[in-house]
Image 1 (cartoon, one colour):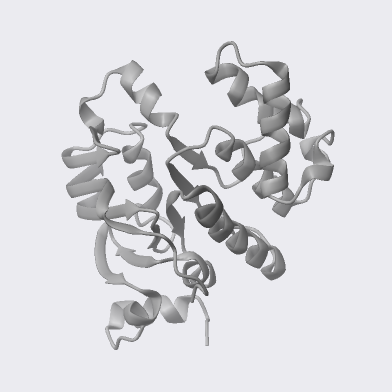
Image 2 (cartoon, helix red, strand yellow; image 1 turned 30 degrees about the horizontal axis):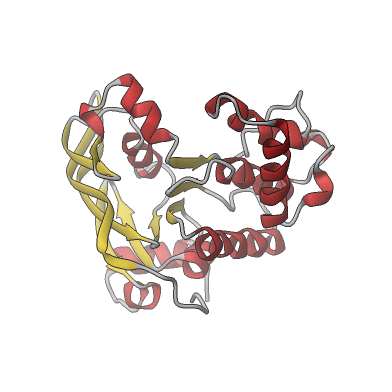
Length: 257
């Protein structure tokens, strides 16, 4: 369990999803999903691969359109937004991809500066340099400024990916399988970083994972997804203190004793 009490505003819903459905042909991926996420909260959406977790967060930022249901993010009804309004919303929602999504032809510093230069016209070189230094310090990788992505370990690439997302100071962080492909020690480092980001930057986060260790370490609220539906939600110990066959099956799937 997390060893600190996050500053969650339970009165302020920053994500409110109601009765969400999404299919691709005969493949019914989301089957009536409802979810509330409050300001400052880390919500883990836990489920096996292929259960619809990534589809859910893509709908949140307008990369996919729902078949039906309501999707409200930061007070905006996402399916009704124009292209420009979606662009503005996405600047407030940081998306951390599984592989870090770094540009291999750019140094770490150039990768971090890119979103600033692209989205903040007129920003000075001195300000860019300052902000790059600050986020590198926040993820503990100041020494990598002039390195190329190919010189980084998998864990370092994940950290730099998080730093590049943080540099625009988003209100919401979306983490897609943040510990996938990492060794146990590096997984622990990434989990700690997600918690540090929550504390230091007062972010609200959704963490998509099938890793129970990650879920237990970072989640204030756990939501278990199976076959496009949420079958249980609550604090980690409450969710998994259950004789429900579906919950125990998922617990055993992770081989956690």
